[in-house]
Image (cartoon, rainbow, N blue to C red; front, side):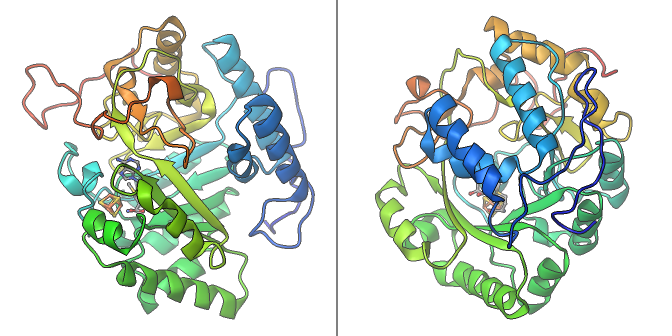
Length: 388
Ligand SMILES: C[S@@+](CC[C@H](N)C(=O)[O-])C[C@H]1O[C@@H](n2cnc3c(N)ncnc32)[C@H](O)[C@@H]1O
Ligand code: SF4
């Protein structure tokens, strides 16, 4: 389907059949969200959320009429504390939880990840897509380096053919000529390269010189420009005690080189009592072995409530386990992983999951969930009833 075209899809709001996937106004380049999406992003961020820094994220997430309407419905359901939410908008597909780096704050790199490592089978990937229905976008990564997946290019193209925008975040260190070719041939909409602060903090956290990461980033930008592709290329840093001092230098270094300079707060392990938006936001996460959870913070699938080999993503979205999780959040009866989910408080980056009042500079990096007397790496606990 050509980008920016109209295609008739039906929205899943009760009783409403609305022409969907109409872009929120045509645009000259896919590297920037359409004008109307940016305008709506500004309005929602400033007036409704009172967080102007969220405008860009909203414009990137909600670029079609369908996406916007389902997003509004999901937000209403969150506000009203409903156990059903109108629709699935996105899926995170963890192509692998293997990685070539050992970043100090990341459970994949620092050994805290208790799940077995592997590569998503193409069959699992296809089942996830088949059961998802129309999606606005797919994130082709989770807790690992997706460019290590031998079929990365093929799977990314299949995701694109499904009709969703496709995004990937990479550590950039594997972007040699061959992988750059694969990435550019996959029809992705956005590639984000992770850089952590300045050269010193980046090397300390990621264990590789910034020059190596930048070589991949520069190669990708140069080749994208040479081919005149509509691919947005971003950089993203994690704001933490180790990198906070370097935020300004980071922004200055990349502002003119990339389409977006993103900053996200470090996930920390604190104390939370309030409802989180994530169970209503419209996304599900498929781990490399096919298990489904609802939040990317759930790195060991502690909340996992289904498997794409047996359940469609669409049925899981409002299945018994998701309804139960939403009830727990509404009633403040949070499951352990949610009760300890906080983010590093900083003016430089907006929290996605937590409320600023619950954040603490002293909270440690996120850690393994307490597993009672289960041996480390033992079978994961399951919550809720079997999915419908
Ligand atoms: C887990 S990585 C996977 C993609 C790829 N390997 C990379 O490094 O960009 C996805 C994103 O999560 C971020 N990340 C990793 N550990 C984190 C943590 N403890 N808190 C916040 N973000 C984290 C990374 O910096 C990266 O931007
Ligand atoms: S942040 Fe990315 S590159 Fe670093 S260890 Fe985690 S998955 Fe690997």
